[in-house]
Length: 436
Image (cartoon, rainbow, N blue to C red; front, side, top):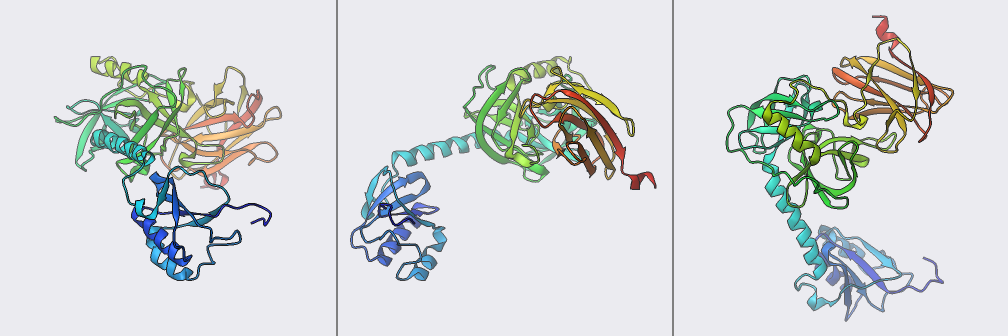
């Protein structure tokens, strides 16, 4: 601390619960030999308070207690952390006798938010299923009591039957009965001999708004069925029919619901896109807007929906991917007519190829006109790998073993937003495999 600063004599106390907070205050007051202490409950919902006493000097630190070991031993169960503050904005002034009294309005607000979370999860989670399709897995939403399930096309693509696992663990057989059009990553599964299954209500069309709370339920990584996360609607993309959200979505959440605070379906979670070089849910999540979902369900019910997979990855914005073959260089050009990366609006062209699990591949992108950037999407549409300068200079190169059989998508992208120009792209097997 700087000695010239004017410090207010406050200690901030954190605790996992109000009872632990009370115990911490008692112990701290005893350690400091405080006869009378006032407490400012700065964050009631988080069980945080400020202890105010004239006995604390600016040079005081948490290691200056007369019996620090006793204090920390007795309060460790309350998960405490202590820091000195040089300023405070009191929300509520309490003394020790009042600390255990009913919660403030801030605590009531926190309780109300928690009540919404619990209500949404209780209402919707019984109708969220896990889907096992071949070697992959995803999530699904029960739409009707007779077992019509909505999910992503990339979850069930290539399958005619799947295993559906209900929220209570019961396993049922399901038939893949419909797919969305080429730019709509949706599919329908019909559970066999089902009746009286729980369902999720569909929100009114046009009801999604930026800033509203959003809730996701799914089976991330195929291992944690019923996982519940919260966030907001960050952006609505009307051109692609997508909702952008900061709600945590991971691989395995695909096909699960995005919900409003009434537990109604506002979107179908479909993809994530992390910042360059990153992975997991730290990036941007996408859900297919209910305005796109409702017409698909109509086509499923009237029998006009395609019976085979038509979709491209939702990250492609409906752009068709060009087939690329091994050891056949492709000359391409990024223009203003190319696809737009949804995270940063940089241009890309899409290519796909058939890969086998364990296959060692190299993808090279070179150019003297742009700064190449490569992105590889897995068969389920999830972001698999990135590279910027791995090919030397500004050129990009990806070298990796493919994790599963399926159709992979390569995005020939540029690192800088707005760059256009020519490039060369080449897909090859690593030389060690060619010699076998």
